[in-house]
Length: 568
Figure 1 (cartoon, rainbow, N blue to C red):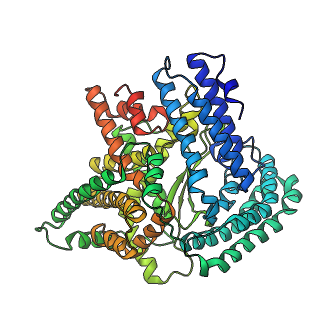
Figure 2: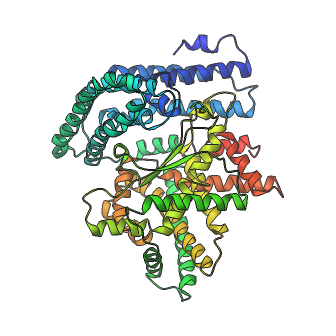
Figure 3: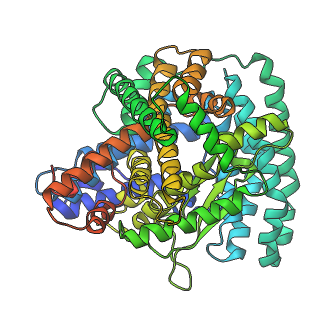
């Protein structure tokens, strides 16, 4: 990072801020090459992040310099978009510095040292010249043995859940170095020798790391919970909102009761009987039995559901649907163990392909792991039955993540700030809001069972709303209130109507991803409120115009979106 005096001196107003912002973003990307690759900036594809003590210290120095440079930019004279960008960048840099200096995940989380996410975009994404990607993969493979030596030397007290997950993902990364990498080399044969010279050592290092972690399992008894103060700080940076954990918990538990009443009322209407205990669960079980899914049908059903909801959103004219390519794929083993599905769009800085279109968005779905007993597989697919697959296709697909991130990928602001820094609160909040849009409108299938199909979708959507609300309760109570696993399981199963396997997976996720689970609940309410405020400010405006306007500013924290829309 350049000297702050040089970064801020001699420039005035808007030009001054934009020059500082661009240099800060450049410095951040260069010091985090794996993040740069994920965003679509390929200048540093031949490097891995430096997680040594020296590398972490250098990153902290850069972040402090960046904060000093940003603090030297006067806000007077900046227009609303530039003021928003300044706040977003300052908060992002401050959050990174807090994570480096206070959270220090590199000292206790074996997952952060794994190179799977550094390799996967280069191996699996068809972006750029295959030969250049293969050469970058070779360079990163060559760096893996040293990277994992650094990990073993630096990791101290670890939690069992982090170690177990890292063991699985380490061996999943070895799988990535097989057929997937061979497919890339088939398109870049001149790089085969270069890659093969370093591939065996990288695979051996990953296996060695997995075995080392296995040897540490008996001693991996550190508490993965953050505690009150660290959780409150991480939550603030994750949400970029003034809401405290106490206030958020009170709101979420109150809303949970309201959603319970709503889903009970719907279940009662479906069976045309008075509400009674266990009725909601009985209706959900019946709906799951009517729409069975298994390992052989899950991907075809996801493709069918995505086509269905995409067509429905277009006919309803709810929002502009970009005609971007989407591929539904099995989740790679290197990324399993946390979520059941995710949307993986091309990086927002990724250049368009030769045809002018962006690279495909990957919608990844995790299969049931080999070796699961039949009862556990059946439980998984009761949770992710055909009706739930449709709701999941709305959330992960259209008009959820796939659509929102396609709009976001088209955004180009005066700086790269809102292109490079996406708010998880906005991204997840929009996806939960998208579920509401489609469930309220119905699927429009027609026929004698159309009403029953729409009612089934509304049940799944309300079950997911229970889940997102419970997510926030879990997040806070697990990390800051000492919630036990038994208490969490009862909450998810009894009040969220989740299958036991789904609840057990969410318990692990709550321990692994502190502050992320709250983004669904907080984001949904904040995005919903922004849309309502915009509707009030634009009386008579069509839904498509309102939603396009909400999506036209990248993915900023919802509180900043109000300023960008002129609602503040």
